[in-house]
Image 1 (tube, rainbow, N blue to C red):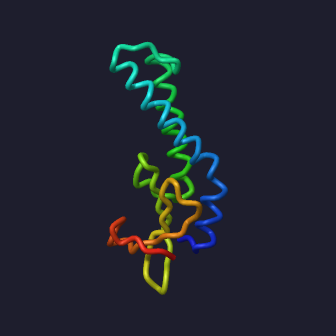
Image 2: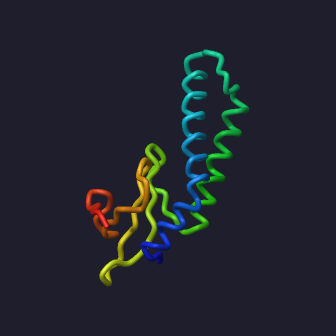
Amino acid sequence: MFTLAQARHLVATLHPRIDELIRLRADLAELRADLAGGRPSPLGGLAEGKGLEARLHAVVEELREHDIQIKGLAPVLLDLPGERDGRPVLWCWLEGDADVSWYHRADCGFAGRRRV
């Protein structure tokens, strides 16, 4: 369980890894599109694609080791379990957010997001 302050600190600390995840995701999407279209890619070929996949999965696993729930990769959506007013919640960070500024009840999902 994370307090809001702990969730904010952890996301800020891991932001370079999250940025790497976003970059790897974009590189992999471009490489796959080029390969599917039969075009040469400046990002390489099948072997480089496998390498990108492995690096992407390593970053995802690193985030999970911090008890972060990865709910989406495109866009990146992260949930961190916590408590608010005595109820279990998930502190929610969506790609593009400057900070952890949202939460939702665990049983409501993304549709139940509210500002902190």
